[in-house]
Length: 196
Image (cartoon, rainbow, N blue to C red; front, side, top):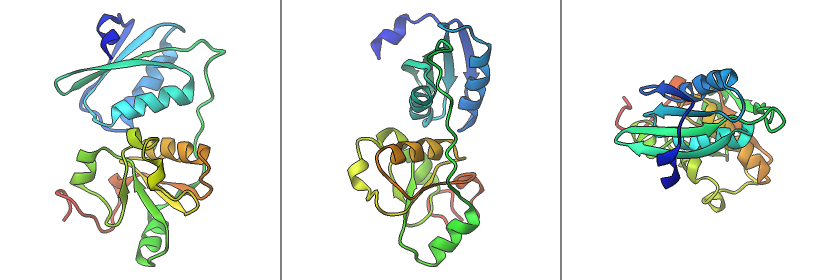
């Protein structure tokens, strides 16, 4: 977005080196300190942060203004909403534990395991048989999923999977669950360059 070159941030938040969900967690806290209408610049290196901030802004009512990338650093710009514009952030309540997911995988149950992490994260480590659609591409690739089937959504730590679940439910999916703690705590079989 070229207009981001002219944005003057009122507050700069350094989230470089932090992985999901920490950039969002720190931004939520910083947003609470800002006056409505003020702009925050969040500096992040997590490749998934672009989709995270776009979706978080959409779900909370804060305005996503754009992202400027300089090398490995992404500068995300968000404007704090007025109290009347702020939406109560919804927590997706339908979840599945690692143990329940392991049982489904072992029992060859018919379900879709949807991994919404970025391509680099997926290449490093993923659960065999999972379908990979990054969160930022989910809306455009929705036709690749059967919304009538049971869908378990996984990400790195749980934040992106919750956003993806909310989106899927809004598009008509009935049997959607977010995998608690994401793949970071998964002890089952994995594939990828970091897998044992």
